[in-house]
Structures are given as C-alpha cells and as structure tokens.
Amino acid sequence: MSASRTASTTDAPTTTTAPRNSPARVVLASLIGTTIEFYDFYVYATAAVLVFPHLFFPSDNETTALLASFATFGAAMLARPVGAVFFGHLGDRLGRKTTLVASLLTMGIATFLIGVLPTHAMVGAWAAVLLLIMRLVQGFAIGGEWSGAALVATENAPKGKRAWYGTFPQLGAPLGFIIANMLFYVINLALADPAAPGQPSAAFLDWGWRIPFLFSAVMVIVGLWVRLKLVESNAFEHAKQAGGVKRMPLAEAFKHHWKALILGTLAMLATYVLFYLMTSYTLTYGTRPTDADVPGAGYTYNSFILMLVFGVVFFGIFTLVSGPLADRFGRRRSLLVVTAAIAVFGFLFVPLLGGGSTPLVMFFLALGFTLMGLTFGPMGAFLPEMFPTNVRYTGSAVAYNVSSILGAALAPIIAVWLWTVADGSPFWVGIYLTGAALITFVSLLLTRETKDVDIEA
Image (tube, rainbow, N blue to C red; front, side, top):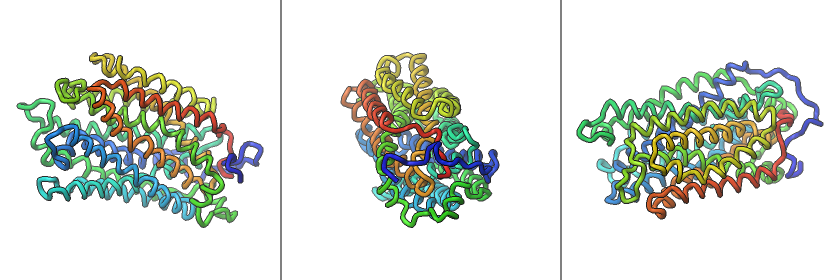
C-alpha cells in the first residue's frame, strides 16, 4: 500500500456487519478508561503545581522548584511513544480488549504507588527519583490507553457515526479534569489553615495530597470490570480471519504508512499545546501572587480551580458537539476551521488572561476550552481512520504519543520559561500556541478526508 493511501475509501466494498458490542458497552468501555487516564494525569498536574515543588524538589527559588516539578510531569511524555509501540504491538497482534486491560492496570498501579511515596524530607533525593520512575510508568501505560479506547469506539460505531462515537473516549479528558480537581478542591478546603488562606495547609502537604492518588484504585477496579466484558470488534476479527494480522505492526506502519504517521503527529500538535496551556500553565499563572518574582494573576487555588472547572464544562460540551459536525462536514474541514481559530486565540492571552479582570479571565477560559473540545473531539476518529486495521492500533498510538513529546512534554516548560522571560506577561506563551497551530494547519492541508473510509479494510 502506498504511503499516501492509509485506508480504503468508499470505492471499496463497505461492510454491513453489525457491531459485536452493544452501544452502551462501547460508550462506557471507551469513556471510563480515558476518564481514569486523564484523572490520573490531572491529579499529577495539580500536584506538580501545589505539592511536588515543596515535597520532592525543595529549593530557595520558587521558579526553579516549579520547573523541576514540571520536568517530571513532561518526562512521562517521553515514555509514551515506548508504551505506544509496546501496547500497539499487542493491540494489533492479540486484540484490543487484552491490551486495554493491561494498559489500564499498569496505569492504576503506578498512580496508586505515587500516593505512598516518601518525600524529600524522608529519603532525600531518592524521593524525586522514585517519583520520576512512577511518572515514567504512567506515561508508558498512557501510550497504549488512548488508541485502544478510540478503536473500541470507532470500530464498533454504526455507519455514519464514527466521529460521534469517537468523541466518547475524548470526553474522558474533561470528566477526568473535573473529578480530579474537585477532589483536590474538597480536600484542600477541608484541610485549610485559617491563618494562611489560599495556601496548602500543613495537613494537606503532609497527607491530604495523597488521597486523590490512592482513590484512583477504586476507579481502576470499575474500569477493569467494564472492559473485561468487551468482545473484539468485527474489524479486528475480520483481519485475523483473513490472515491480515502482521507479525511486526510497527515495521509495517513505518514502511507503508510513514506519511500518515508524520501528518497524524503534526495534526495533534496544536491540540496538545492548547490542552496543557489551558490546564497546567493557566493554573500556575492564575495562582501565582502578583508580587512574586515572576508575577501571576494572584487568585487563590480554591478560587481559580472553580474558574477552571467552569471552563472545562465548555470543553465537555463542545467535545460532544464536535462529533456530529465532523460526521456531517468531515474531519479535515472541521479541524482546519478550529485550528485557524486557535491560531487567532493565541493573540488573546494578554488582553484576556493578563487583563486583570475576572470576567475576562473566565471568558478566556470558556473560549479556550471551547476550542479544545472542538479540536480534541474529532481526533478520536480522525487518527484511527488514517490507518488500516492491521496497523491501526500501532499507527494511531505512535502518532498520538510522539505528538505528546512535541506538544505536551515541552509545553509547560516552554510556557514557564517564556513567561519568565517576559517578566510575568503571557504574551509569548500565546505566540507559542499560535506557532503550533500554524504547523498543525499546514499538516491538515496535506492530509485527505477520512470520514468515508471503510474502517474494516
């Protein structure tokens, strides 16, 4: 198969086989895993701002401690492509169900263990080393989680509704954010120190921060129960019966679908940069005091997290809205329009986020998360559709997770550095987002529409 042709189009016979899993089972199985995935990542992201600089990377310089904390946050992205190759190989060789169970279990164990780690005060520098190891394991597991969930949704979707079904694993991102941050909010509020309002209390830093990590075990048990009830999709079973399963899916993907790998990676770039700027960076900027060495907006954590949750509601709504739009108008056309809007949005960081007005900041969050939903939603169908069944897990996982290095791993660190260079102004952070959007826009121009491909080919 040529590099430019990644899946069969409508001139190929289209299957009419009914999906083997019920719609409710498909939605729940694809949604619950990514909800847990993003819950775990948001719990870590929040702790990376509030807790880890104090407990694992103590320093006389707040910015240095924050950068060290974000470095471990980004380190997980480096492990994600390794996980994508490993779990992608299993998914294309053994099936989607087995792989999804393995990735979820790995993620849950790593997150739970973070909740019982010793701090720097207990074991010195080993605390940071152990945290880094657990973070790498998290990233490794995430490398196989998203693609499996997206394939469960899209390979079991009714005809003409793949983008709609593909939004359900994407919906895990806003749901995971809300659950993780509201849990942190409640714990922080319950353990608040009246003498230091807005700051993490001694009890919170001592043991309260561990609760969200330990709670992930409950969510993982529920997720495993749901996923063990799945059966393999028709697409994978047909490929298996026809002898289409490849011995080395990664080699097959790089040999015959290298163009789709590159374009898929770049197509996700703006999504990842926007995603982590709207979560990690805005939380950092919003809660940094106005008189700090690198000033921020000066909100208390409890106040700003409620503002973020308000914005994330728009994320969830427009993730679901994006599916029917992409099914009707096409994935490529929808993503081109949204990516252009993201490029413009980068110029609004100073007047909205840095404007010093709470209504403007809330409008900034609502607008940014609306764009996030509109760009993230169609990706659940778009990336899998770029690859044929026998390398679909590997191809979509590699593209999705390599993009995480270029976008997500670097975004918090670059944003903090640009913010520092600009003496507290978010101007260059917004320009960084605009640059990422322009790269994604060009890559989308070079792709073809995928909404009419035969996904069982």
